[in-house]
Length: 161
Image 1 (spheres, rainbow, N blue to C red):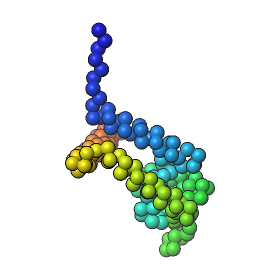
Image 2: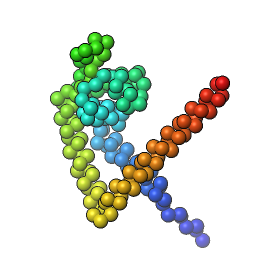
Image 3: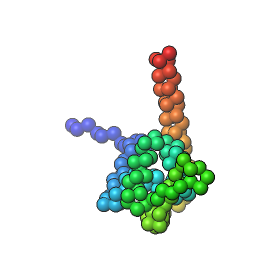
C-alpha cells in the first residue's frame, strides 16, 4: 500500500509562490536585458528619485562594486543615466531616463493588475486577514534573519578573538 503524501504546509506554499514569482519575472524580462537585481535598482531610483551610487548600494544592501555593475548594465540598456552631483563633485547621481521611467510606469501598471488578479482569488471577507498574515510572516522572517546574522557575527567575533 503506497504511503500517503503529507499535505503541503504553509511554508511549502510560500516557497512555491516564491518560485512562481521568479518564473513569472524571468518570463516577463526575457529579452529585455533586465534581471531581478537590475529591476530592484530601477524600483529604488523610481521611488526615491535620483541618488548616488553609494546611496543605492546602501538601500539595496550590496557592495559598491556590485552597484557599479548593475548601473553600468542599466545605463547601457538606456534605463538610467549618470550625471554630476550638484553639490558633491566626487559623487555621481543615478536617475531614470525617459525610457526607464516609461518601463517603470508599465511595470507599476502590470504590478497593480497582478495584485488585483491575485487578490481576486481570495474571498473579499478574507483579504484583510490575508494581508495581516502575510505582513506578520514577512516581519517574523526579517526578525529571524536579523537574529541569525547577529549570532553569526558574534560567533565570528569569538573565533577571531
